[in-house]
Image (tube, rainbow over all chains, first blue to last red; front, side, top):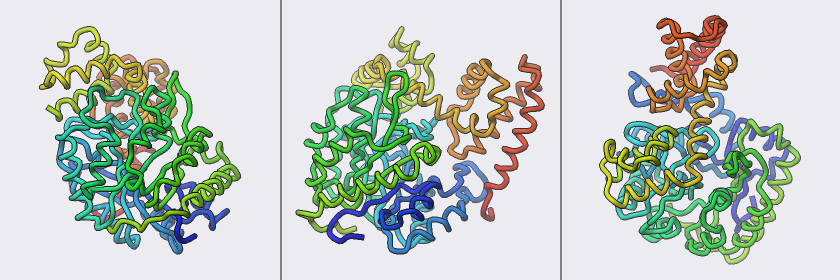
Length: 303
Length: 148
C-alpha cells in the first residue's frame, strides 16, 4: 500500500477472491457488507436473529493481512422516522471485533425501511429519497452519534441515487452532508456513479453537486457501472465505470484532501460478463486516480 | 408528519395502482396518511414524476428477485399468471424479508394455500412447487448456521 494517498479496493463479494488471487497488489483495501455476511431472520424470530455465514467470513479473514478493512451497511435506513435498529448495530460491532476492527463504517443517505414495510434493495439501488429538513437532520444526526458510540470508528454517509427527487427542499443534499460533517457527525462517501445515475434520470449536474460539497468532508469515493432500462439508467453495478464517471473522478479527485479510499462496486453475478482482465484494468486505472491525490494531503480525521 | 410521508412514499413505490389512484384524485392520500400541505405537494410531484414508473418497476424487480432465483421453474409454470399472484402476495405482505429463503418460503406457503383453496392454477404447478419448496425449506434450515 502506498503511503500518503488513498487506498484502492473493492466492495467485497464472492467474486473478490478471484481478483485478489490474480492481482493481489492492486487490492489494498476491502469493504465488507455485514448484511451479506449473515442471514437476518428479523426482529420477530424467537432466538438468535443473525446467523453468520461462517465460511464467507473466514474467506474474508484470509484476505485481510496487509489490507485495510472497512464496512459498508445497507440495512439501517438512517433517515427513517423510526428508532435505530439496535440489534443490527450490535451485530455490526460484533463482526467488527471479530475481524479485527473496521477502520470506518459507511451507510446510505436513503430510505429503505418504514414502520409498516420496507423497500427492498437487491442490486438495482432502490433507496427512496430523503426530505432534507430539520426533522430529518435531527433523526440522522442522533443515529450517527449512536452508531459512532457503539462501533467506535468513523462513520461516513453515502449520497443516494434517485429516480424521483423530492421537490421544495429546505436544504440540498450537499448542504445536508456538509452540515453533518461540520458538526462532526460523519464524513461523506461520495458515490460518483450515483451522481451520474441521478443526472441521467433528470437530476442535478454532477459537477454542480460536487462544487456544492465540502471537499474536506469526502473520505471515500465509490465507482461503479450500470445499464439502461425502460428509458432510465440504473445503478445496477453490472459493468465497468462509464467514461463520464471517470472524467468526473479525474476532474475532482485532487480536491479531496482527506480521501482514504477509492472503491469499485460490482455485482458478482456480472463477474463473468465483465471479465477478470477488464476488472484488473479497472483497478489499475483506480491506482492512477489515487496517484492524483498524492499531493496536498491532509491528515485523516480522528475516529 | 414525516413518518406518514415516508410511509406514503414507500406505499406508492410498492403499488402502481395506488400511484394511478393518487394521480386521478389527490384526496386518496388524505384518507390514508396524516400529511401537511407541503408533504402533500411533494408526494403529488413525486407520483407524477416520470421516474416514479421506474421506481415501481425496480421495487417489483427487487421483490421478484428471491422468488425468481429460488423458484425458477415455479415462476415459469405460472407464466403470465405470475404477475397477478405476486401483486396479491405483495399486497398481503408489504414487508419484504431480506433473507431470501424466508421470503421465498413464505411465497411457497402462499401458493400452497391458493392450491388448497382450489384456485385455478396450472396443472403442472403442484409437482413443480413441491419439489422447489422442498429445496427452499432445506436451504432455510441450513441457514441456521449458529446455535439459537
